Structures are given as structure tokens and as C-alpha cells.
Image (cartoon, rainbow, N blue to C red; front, side, top):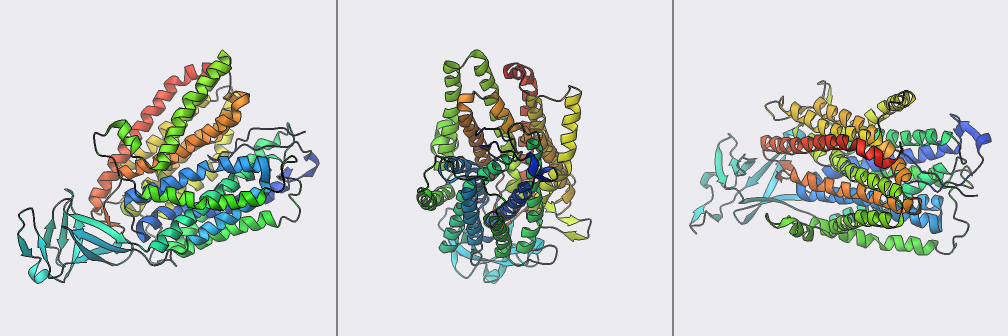
Length: 627
């Protein structure tokens, strides 16, 4: 008879499985677990290899290849990751009702592989230009990496200066000479001669950088991202479902099995976040093969994942099959329907790209009304569902159930804050690494900005076993921290990570770059914080929810993570820095901007964490013994 378990896989976004009771005790053969776990472990590792390899490149690809502004870059990134955590709700539902987990995983793997492959066709890099006092000029780029500089050539045309209407010759002897673009602290721009003297001073607001992009390349970019989003919705929730189905009801190996499975997630991301940026942008003096190579490697990893699940040699027969009562003639409709949603996702991305910040003083309502469609949907749904579910619990449940639901909603809200700040890794922290971090490793070689995301995966793999032993040891002594205390520690940890980097910025060199190890220290602190919150979230939801709406509560949990990803993009936009040709024009201003934002969110997170620690005792009472 089918039974259900809660799935506490640690990665945010892993969905509880519909676990069928199957007697597999006699079939153990891989580290004391069913042999099928090895196949699923490798399949998930290769899928995560593709996803995290692509994610390590995405922000830099948008900023440097397409020359999108920081606001557009971080907006697209936040919208993409938000949809990645939102679509599994639909993919899991379709698998449970119609396709079955295994068919869904195969279909998702194909779409994601095609998505990464589509990203390879970025075409020629966007051509930078600048609009100076109303007139457009082409910008030329010389050098690579840290030696990369942007120049503008002003011809013999005339420019209107100030508001007097007077026309004057541009630069005299400096006309038709390449002039170095340098941003100033007061947001003015200086055009410098070869000897470093100023040839022209551009007032604030009169220099507007831009990029001329190929429309077909941008179209393919958004289509590729849409394929990844939709494919992930089919793949991500259902691979966990198959893992859960390997264990019979009451099998104590199940939690350990998911721990092994989770290690596959981190091992896959660990290697891809080194290799994909290596192929794309190189390392040290080697400039790499190009963006296409990094995305091609991600596509290859995803294709291997599909091969492992498609040609399993019968090892997965009987697992993740179509539900017995599901109609068998709906598959084609679902596949075609999924493909027809590609234009919808493409539209959401284009709407994000056209977002304009509201004018100051427009108020909260004005801010909400000017949000992109994706923002309105996510915020609106979350703000309605949280109080709506609590009202339902108050009316339909007893006092104990209502109190437990209250505790769950409070923790969901704090969890949203954590992931909003933690997910700066792929956006503002990656741009900080590219612009204001000395990437030298002991002076032996240099890594790229995309490869810095390797630190988190490495620390998780290294520390996860130690934390497992720590919690077990504390539990045996009866002093293991409660769930609210762990959440509070995690929030304080994510804040302290930012403050650690801010402290390191005081030791920046004359080039306004901090040593790589300060950024590595941030990721170490953030990884410790992640291990305090990630493994317990899903389990907490299933234990605190009223049984009749546990599925709905799980939906709210994933909605909160999706909202966090979207808001993470908005936070990263606050740290936007003006660029020309994908490069900042003043590293001092860039460093001060990042330090200012990181200081604010660092202290904010510490304060929120302290607040949760204060609330831990009343929340413990509301949880009625749930641990």
C-alpha cells in the first residue's frame, strides 16, 4: 500500500517525495543502501554539474558579453533563479497526477540540456557606445582582464555645452584621438589623454553608457533560460521522489540515503564551478575558449544525466513509474503544453528587462504597482497566502494546530530573509569578485570571478559530516539547539559573513581590490550558516503543518524561496555600479558602493537573527515539542 514520507533533502528546492513502500532490505549493496541509489546519485551530480556550472557564468555573461547594466543583469538573474525554485511545484504535480517521476526526469533533462546548448549561441559580443551630452559615440576596448580599458573618440563635430545653447568645437587637437574613460567620485566622467591629463570633463548625468546587442542573440539567450526553467521544474522535484521510493516504510536508512544524495548535489556543483568558468574565461594569462565552451560543458553534463536515467539497464524498473490510476494518453499534451509555456517565460524575462525604478516618494503602493509582472505575482501570492492559511487554520483547526501553523509561518518568513541575502553569491558577490577582488592565489596563479562560487560547495562538502556529528552529539546530551535557534544563528551568520568582507575592505590595496581570502572567508561563514538552516527546513514544515494542507504549506515554502531569489535580485540592484563596455570606470566608487550595501545588509541580518533568538522561546511553546 502506498505510504508517504517527508523528504528532508538539504538543498533549498528539494521536494518531498511520494514514497511507495517497497521491501528492499535484501537488495542493499551500495554502502549499505539500495544499488539504485548509486545511479540516482550520479544522475543528480551530473544535473547539478550542468546547473551550477551555468549559474557560475550567467551574471558575468550578461554583464560582459551582452553589456547589460548592473540593474538589468541582476534583475534577469534574480528572476531566473526565482522561476527555477517556483516551477518544481507544477512539475511535481504533473508527475504525481499523470507522468510519473521517471518520465518527468527524462523530459526535464532533455529540456535543460537544450537550454544550456542554446546559451552557446550568444553571437558576437555587444558593441559598447556612450551618449555624451546627447550625442552617441562608439567606445573601443583595449586589453583583457585587469588591463582592459575603454576609450572614446570624439570627432570634429560640435557639441552643445551647458544650457546656454552655445556651440563650440569639441577638442581641437584632441579630436579623433582615443580618450580614456574614467569615472569620478562625484559621478562626473573625465576623458583622459595618453599622458593622463584631462581632455574633457563630462557633467554628471551627461554620460550614458550602452551596448548595441544583436536582437537574435538576446532572443536565444532568453529562450535558453526559459528551457532551463521549465526543464528544471520537471527534473528537480521528481529525482528526489525516486530516491525516496527506494526505502520501505520505517526504513531507518532513508535519512542517511538522502544525505548521500545531497552530497552528489554538492560534488557536482564543486567541479562545475571550477571547470565551466575555466573553459569560458580561462585562468591567469590564458583567456579561455569563450563563453560557448563553458555553456557547452554544462550542456554535456546535463546530457550525461539524461543518459544515466534513460539507459539505466533496468536498474530503475518499478521506481518512479506512472501512477496506477493515471491516464496514459496525456503525455503528449503535457509535453506540448510545456513547450508552449516557453513564450510565457520569455515574456516574463523581457518584462523584467524593461523595469524602471519608481520615482522617490511614490510610497509602498506606488512601488508595488511599478513592479514587473513576475514581482507582482510572487509578492501578491505570498502576501495573500500567508494570512489566508492562518485564517483557515484558526477557523478549521484546534488551538494547538493554529499555534503550530503560526510558528511555521514565522519561520518561513525568516527563512525568506536568509536566502535573500545568501543568494547574493551569484549576483552582487560575483560582480564584486570580478571588480574589486585580487584573484591571485598565493601569487602562483589567478582564478576567475565565476570560480569563486566554488568556495561554498567546497566548504559544504567538507563541513557537512562535521555538522552531522555535532548535532548528533548535542542531541545525545539533550542540548541540541531548537529549530528557531538554528534559524537565528544562520541569519546572524549570513550577516557576519558580509561584515567580515567589509572589514577586509579596509585592507584593500591602492588598486581598490581586497585579497581573495576575505571573499573566501565570507563563503566559509555563509556555508556554516547554511548548514544551520538548510537541512531542517522541509522537515520542519511537514512536522508543523496541519495534515490536511501539508501540500499547500509545502507550496508556500517553495513560494517563499522563489520570492527570496527574486528579492535577492532587487537587493543586488541596489549595489549597481555604472559600467562602460562591461567594466567599471572607477574602482574606488565601485568598492565604496559594495561596502556600503554589504554593511547595511550585514547589520540587518545580524539584527534579524538576534530578534529570532529572542523569539525562540515563545516559538518553542507554539511548536508543542516539535524538534
